[in-house]
Image (cartoon, rainbow, N blue to C red; front, side):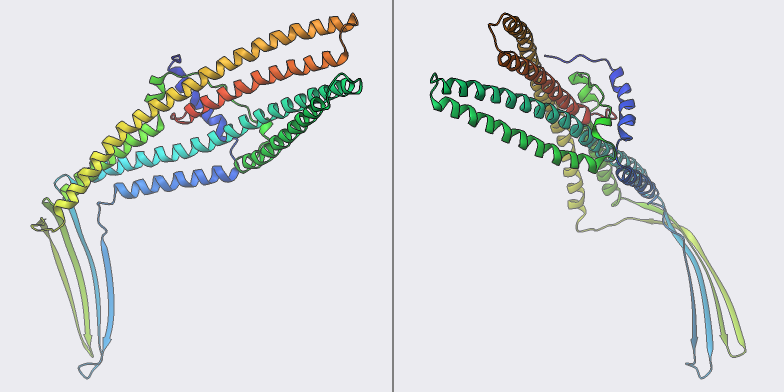
Length: 395
């Protein structure tokens, strides 16, 4: 089955993301904001890293080495700035851009994972609510079954093993409900680590089905692999440029004051020029370049692998959803059947042919079928959430 979706879904999903962000706890939002600021400043630093500092130094010394006190003051400003590195400066800027993009994607992925965890917790808490309600109804039916079998046992119409089996079934269901309640408590505490809201206050978006084409085009992991490939490419180019000619401007201004008793002397020095340099022998040159080339090749292969893995992930989720939709249809069919059975039982009760226990059992079973449909629909939402969490700005 192929999912159908319009491209407008990707743009409207940005609104979903901004809506979801508000549900994160203040601490989580503060951490995310600080990390974004740090990444921005680091990216700027990296982009300007090729610019060398202008260095200023000052020294003061005093000596009696020649039999009389002398003082010396020395001040110096110097710079040595590469202006052309056989493309190295250009590649350094390109690398910084690729690195910035990579970190932005990593930050976006982290934020998406937090929101996914939040939505995932809410959906699973709602699922557990339905499962606990379903377990409660099953226990009520089990108690009715015990009552019936007890009456039959007391009348000598039933062996005690049947009654014992009914009691054991009721006990098993009660333990299952306790396990569900324990799971809900643990999940609720995990949710409270993510949000200051009550989980019932969170407005869950309805996730529409997406096509494989849209999923791959907007896939965060593929974008990350692509950005990583660009990083590796520019780093390879930078490494090669390190072993090519570099043109630099350099300058130096020095001022020195010497004083011996009553004699003073001041000197100034100015030096500036252009320098061309190139390593003519570097023992690791070949290996350095080869390593960067291999890393670039690895990144290109990883990008292909990421696309392949994402396609398989989409197909797996698509198949799971297809099966869940069939389960929904089965639950709907059961619900229609129980509607008919409840009506017949109520008519039979009015005619004296059925008991209130028959009616209550069928009503509970009808409600269980309705809860099954709800649980399967939540499972579909959970599967779609997996897709949305892998798409840029989708949750």
